[in-house]
Amino acid sequence: MAVLLAAVLAQAPGPASLTLPHYRLHLRVDESVDADALRSLAGSGTVLWLSTRSNMLRDSTLEALKSFPEVYVQVRPPLLEAHARQLGRAPRVGLWVDSSTLDASGWHHRLGPRAVAVEVRGVLDVDVASRVADVRPSRVAWFPGPEDASLAGWGEFVQLPGAKLLGPIALGGRDVALGAWPWRSSASRVLLWTDAKGRALGSAVRRIRVREPLDEVTLVALFVQEPATELELEVGADLESLGYARAWVERLEAAVSGSAR
Image 1 (tube, rainbow, N blue to C red):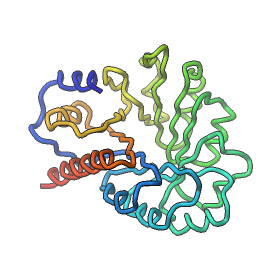
Image 2: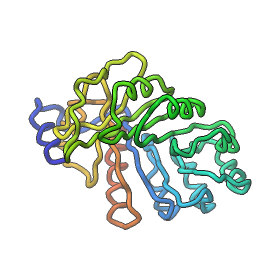
Image 3: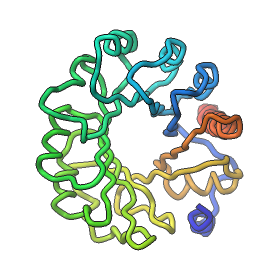
Image 4: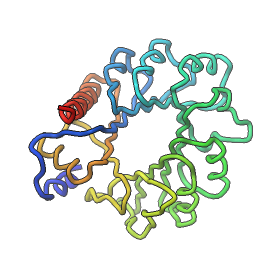
């Protein structure tokens, strides 16, 4: 992150304060977070990713999810009638599934038509792509290992429906150089992590992992360089992590409010 910020600050100076027409802040949160604390993280541009240990949420947590404009809950088979009945009370809640759990049984269909985000880890071949495409995902994230990244996999990836996220590919402790990949494919608008120097590749939208809020100068420079930047924050259940998350939401909400003046 320090290298990224140094690269950002090296760009030409921009406005003195941050104003945004909108933002996207992806919050990865555990189901153990208290419902009131969870609700305090809802903002106009927050996307909640709720990790779970089962398919059954607390009723208070389920109600808190309704505060978010976009939310995905991690689910996995077996999906029982009780699970389907509970999630049926929140039809706007999307499903977050691992591609390895998708099979011919179509277990996720028990939850009815709703947004589905699929995470693919490892090889993305024709069979995997076919299973993913069958659920008509609204989002697909691919995290290839060092031996899994290939142009054949990329070809399957860009043809899948929905918005896409390409994760980092580590080779010997460093990110693989992705510049040779055909990022400007007309078939897809891809989101991807930045490389170690914070460079966005091609016409892709970058997503940056953050923790504590940045100072105003750095934050302004970040969005001046790439206005479509999306941020991601791993939110722990401890007070410090929740405080960082609330500070990010409040700061970005203030930037949107400022642009409307």
